[in-house]
Image (cartoon, rainbow, N blue to C red; front, side, top):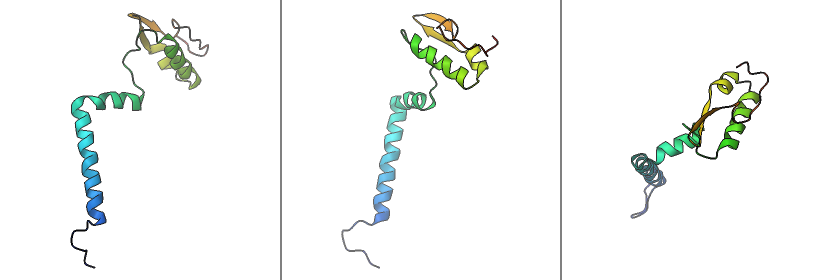
Length: 98
């Protein structure tokens, strides 16, 4: 089947969309946006920021709920330039043996 002169095939449209998507990802990687996006996706934060004690407490409660006692005992949070453990932020987990 011949395509009409000046028409764009469906395959060409898909290739153009994929090329634009790759360019957006490359631009985000070079601008530092990928690091922030990756941290949001994985939920890994190096340190909590000032005033995040309630968030730290919630994370610790999640560790206890998921029976991840090693993380409950080992995780430290930097809150107002003070390093605190789950116990110090007010979280309780009687099953954690630390």
